Length: 241
Length: 49
Image (cartoon, rainbow over all chains, first blue to last red; front, side, top):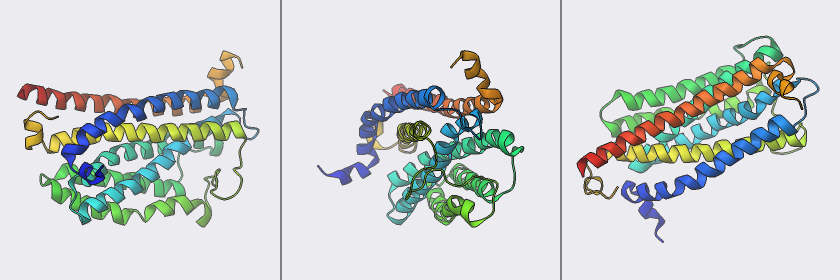
């Protein structure tokens, strides 16, 4: 099988359509399982009470915001460097879901900050850098919307996205580099996580659910973008879609 | 666990449910808007046939 053929929007469009249910259905199941474990099995935290249950959506949302940004920058960069239309379309599709997860991490963070720190918002390193992440997404999306020359918008977006990547490690390490109100990482790549097993299970299942959700949503949106941008291409006007 | 405990979340109900309602609004809203966008595309392709 020649995988490169799927770099062409016309070949990728039907493939993406077939893949979507394989991500959307497991996403729905994992959201249900994760929430069930999070609310009915995971015990109340001895320090934070039940407020910590915000973690099951806050942490996956924050991670998705960062992961999707790196993916978006990667695809935008490939689209720019190799003049690959489909990659640029993928970046545009990722931008919206990434922006929404980043927004959600800020909102749920405010809901968590108020009872635990006594404030909805502080200008500390982690929150400020996450807000900058949201602005980078918004900038990328606005660039796409602002110009009629799509390929020019793609190139400008790629430059913005790639420069902005520097912000991602800043967010990640901000809790170590600066004195912040935000707590440190709960899960470390090396070493034991600092929470009880059912809490960890609920969070990881919610993270998996968010990943599957993102893949399904990004593929659906990518199909729309392909259709909208290639409306006049022969493969669409001849009814292949 | 009693249902009343589930709703009050040990006094943190407003913050916990506020977070999950926000998640429902943001992600549910994304799904609804995307389905509308998809429908519009399908309409365009149907009109051409």
